[in-house]
Length: 362
View 1: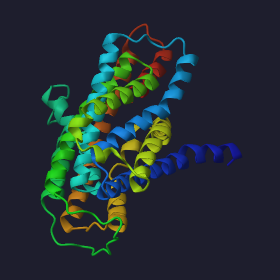
View 2 (view 1 turned 180 degrees about the vertical axis):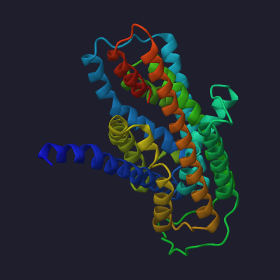
View 3 (view 1 turned 45 degrees about the vertical axis):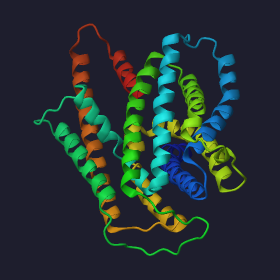
């Protein structure tokens, strides 16, 4: 093996795995820090406003440089700006606000388990609106439907059944979890996750219509922050709650904004380019394992039998659904390849174009 082969193997095989493992751990570390800050008195809505405001400020100088360097970018219209406004409403005012309210009532472990329902929720919505056809004679359709049912069943077990306690933790007086309303928190997170799925569909359609992802991200954060600030008197009417002293609350706000804006988006984009969306999605159930370890270690959470069983069932449903999606995509690509080969007047140089279009959709 030559030196160039070793470099290629390290960059394309090892680094994406290390990056996704780092993202998974930092995602759950962020949720654990935020939960600890909420236990110490930081209101969830205050965190959402300050976190997004700081993130938008971090993005601002990069956005100005982006505008100066890219003079040929698409033109902003009222229709596109309205799309950005709706993205901010769905992705921040609904998704993030409900997510962190749910975490305040439950735990990061609950949030990580419910997040694995996103493919199932998206599939259900697509089937209801007839964007997804269900053919019981197709193995991919059966797998997607079965995975959806299994994942939802696991989430119900996770939420409604705790069972005996598996681990007895030594409670830390600083980060001790507050008494939680497990069921209510899970339902709030589920509603927020549903709005997040709608946001993903709309964001995908928006980036196709306006192919300037950095501008989409900036205006999404900007409009979401403005909306949260406008709603802040209703979300958190207590003026003293908006005074954040130095400590765990300030650490949560700075870490959340800097990590989400500076590192996470760039690393995820790079992993998607190198390994594809299926590789990235396969790390999702690992969030539950990391969340359980960090919750038990730092928050004094208790691990119950029902949570462990539910997490395993959710992960099994997730992988079954993803397998069905991969089978359906491969079958569609095979049909397209046959159509291209049989189409008269098309040369071989059109085949890579189809591949690039498929990659751009991801």
